[in-house]
Amino acid sequence: MIDVLQDFLIDEAFIVVAALWIIGMFIKESPLEKDWLIPFLLLPLGMLGTTSLMGVTPDAILQGVVVTGIAVYGYQLYKQAKERD
Image 1 (tube, rainbow, N blue to C red):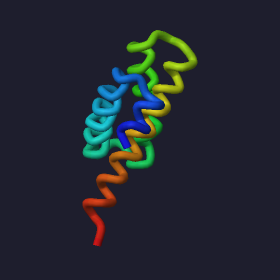
Image 2: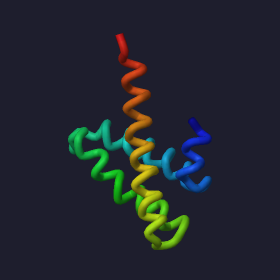
Image 3: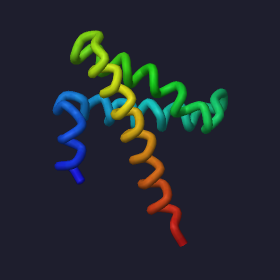
Image 4: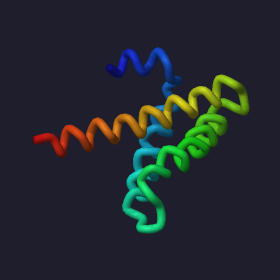
């Protein structure tokens, strides 16, 4: 699985995935935000994180979308595995 991710992400972007995961957990615990808003709030943060690593390029924007997807999808996989019957 990690090998596949390394084909799509630069190595430095994995720290952005971890940061987004943590930020998402804080947002989820906040009573002010709804769960469906979390991906929409994390997407600009993911793009900001990757553009800060790579500069403002189309590839950096795409990396931001990918890291956000990995963070959100990864959390959902974790949550579903934890809550399975």
